[in-house]
Length: 157
Length: 157
Image (cartoon, rainbow over all chains, first blue to last red; front, side, top):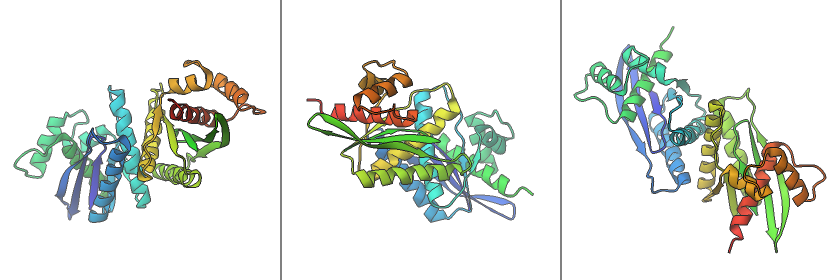
């Protein structure tokens, strides 16, 4: 089991994939959302709680987390970094050392193109996993691509 | 008891102050340091553990945390934001809603000048608390100033 996480403050994407004899299967994917009406600390606490629950439920042997790229929106970037801190803490407390991948590595793993846009990533994942629709929202699709990075990294010679 | 925190990843400043009938006293101040040789997640776990211990030991009625200003060093800013996320999570888990102050508010509370530099802050704290030396390092001095903000805010009519 590989858990992929696309860190976020308002919405965090996650995906659980398995790889059995070269065949990769999506077990689940989705988002953890926190309400802008909640207290800042309570939103971080919800993220910690739900990531903990994912780890407990799926017992991943590998957890892959996307690194932060620097966005033009400073406030958003700092909030995502706060969420990333909470995610990394939660994993450390579960004795998990995550693999970290840059957005470029994630796009490359999903599409073969490090500069692919979100739509290309979603289209490729749809093809790759024979889905009826591209996985949505963006954050969940991204988490699938992050988990793919984890699997690729794991199966390298 | 007011706990002031200057968030940091490699070094986080803290200070505990009390205000009794208008007289403010420093109970303790210092730094939580994490080693660059440790795993990223373990450094965040140490921050969580030590902040939890401070809260348990001093049972502050108010916790004041400095907001992040945007630094030129993007990597540093994102790491400090990760640490801030861990601090805010730890406080939320202890049912504490922190007061947050901008660096300008902190400098203003300590020196009367929102644009004061670190040295001015340290000099003013030395005078204010009749210390033999300016409080050091910077991060600890800053935490005293953050705690001062918490006290000022608390005692407003």
